[in-house]
Length: 477
Image (tube, rainbow, N blue to C red; front, top):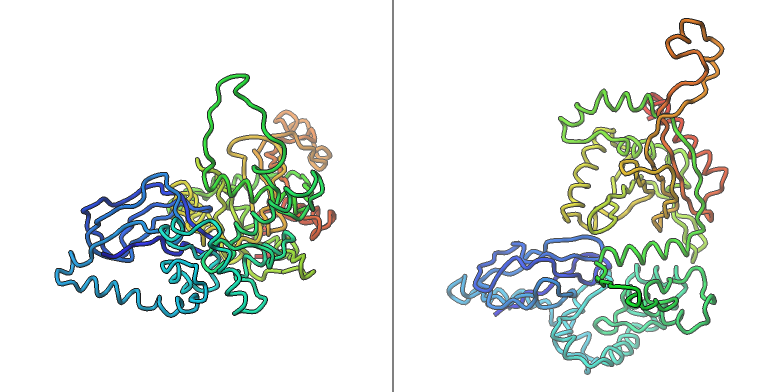
């Protein structure tokens, strides 16, 4: 029998919720066949099988929470090979695991099953032991292994660069964090939990602005709402929970400022209507969002501080030479932000097609973590729903986000029209100085540590002028 375990799902992904089990006992599975659908912190993904054979046991069900390394299925590979070669192949697959196990040997209290987890490279943030090993370990078991590798590696705590960066940014000493992974490996959740304990041990209001907020776990206790009527409690989905944590962190760390402006999109709307069928035939949807992504990509080339990130620990600004634009997508599970890569090198038609594809994947739960990573600046368009202005929260570690609201038709004063007015033009509804124009409300939120108000206003004005003069975008590229 061969066990199929939850494989590495991506950097910083510890596991997820089982949304669907795609095989049953007695089914025959092949290599790379999807057997499980998991909702992780960032996306819903199908997990492919790394073994082939007949399913003998299914150890998870819909709604279960599983971690990387947990056993999902047991498969009889010999039933497919017919001569036992499948079992040999399985053993061959397991051969690379013993050498790392020897490294973990000093940690005698660690269950044997957890040793192979050390084969995972340091680039992975979380290396979770099999579920059986977790259940067999007493609560204090992770503590002894934590000390052993520290002796071997010196003072360096067992944590990936991403975890160390998070600890630096929220003011946590990584060497003080107790790891919950194999051999005391530290995950991002361990760092957050350590920060929560620190916050809970200090008086209210004494926490630093850079620390991770206690969010749902901290603050005042909720009242008993049942005193006033019937209530229903629903668990937060992984995406909703991570969104809450991420936005709380961004709001507490970034000194937000939001500036507002309007852009005349009358000419842009005429061009959009003229070419929308052409783009639709190519598989895209020519929307204002697609056009704004291209404008925004050009704008950050002119204003590079809007495509930067701040490294507080090192006292440095990181200017990105690539231009990736995140586009917020509203789904039934919460907000997702797929990224248009190299947006400055793509034309509006290409961007329209890509947004259409990514939005469909987001709503169908097919977005990958990679497709939501690496953004430099984001755009959130609520115009399809309504509203005038709003204050979008910067998508940390980015430093700016453009909010877009619904286009409205307003009377706009045109001095040249008023000066040249004649009885005939007045009779046609022109020449009075006021003209009906389609105005697009824009809201720019930014990190005031990186961007000054004057630069933000210049940036927003540049975007507005590019919208009002579509030819300008073609002229300057």
